[in-house]
Image 1 (cartoon, rainbow, N blue to C red):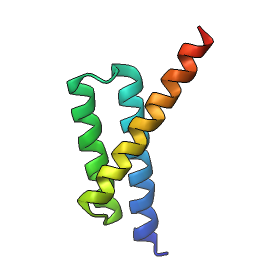
Image 2 (cartoon, rainbow, N blue to C red; image 1 turned 180 degrees about the vertical axis):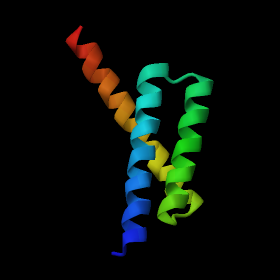
Image 3 (cartoon, rainbow, N blue to C red; image 1 turned 90 degrees about the vertical axis):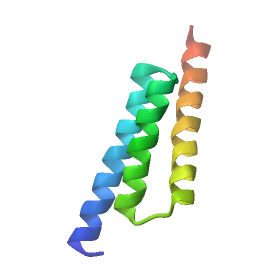
Image 4 (cartoon, one colour; image 1 turned 45 degrees about the vertical axis):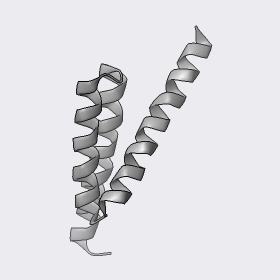
Length: 76
């Protein structure tokens, strides 16, 4: 991979992490999901992915959030 590709991957990974942390701190209200959607869309563009790939990426972020919430609820 080229340095530019590596930089795009690093940016996309950071944006995906930011989308996940947005949901963790704000919950899954409309504003949080809108922010997460925007972050994931930019991450998909940074990777040169399609809109469909961005949708799958968002589903993965939401699934991770839901899994972590289930884990947190089981602890309480």
